[in-house]
Length: 281
Image 1 (cartoon, rainbow, N blue to C red):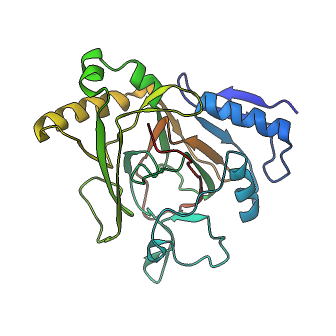
Image 2 (image 1 turned 60 degrees about the vertical axis):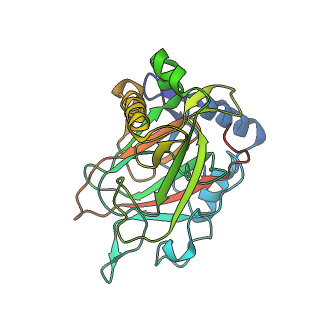
């Protein structure tokens, strides 16, 4: 089978048509999909009807399924049938408590699992229920941002590393929402993608705290320049969700954010990740 690949935006994203992820994916099709993922960074599969096992099988097309990257007590409650490596992202509440993680409102740009020593390379998100408006996911191309970064900023940050901190469940920097569990890491500011060999920006507004070995004022000034440049509209694709959408994105060379949505409307997504196998370099 030859897949149909439709670009979603100039610099990032493609829709894959003609593929039912609820059916077995043969090796040839698997290779085509994986190549499209490396090229386009974000892939969209519309109108999927996936069981939990189907979602895990679809995730495995892109690599080894990642384990949930948070302590057990901070995993979503309810939905007891969920398999171990699937996380709920939801604002639905039972007895006043959300059944899922990251329940409400907008979320700053971030790379999933940047705070881990060996971050997961990709994320899959499958929509079950979506609000009538908002709750969109916005992606930005880290390759394009790096390649167009002002030369003086590149020179100032070349070879430098940044320290990252994340409180589980936090959607905005500086807010811990009463969550005590956290994870921290240190990675290169400019990462090399191990599969493509391309350089990409690997810091973000939500999780990055400081540049190692640099005074705070200078670190903040340079990081703000990088954030502002990385988040420019020209590098972006904004996805408006429909039920049955599956998005797969590469965390090594993209970051993403979430737009605000009404707390009075239900949103339920199932999330899996693709395990990383190298330390960022």
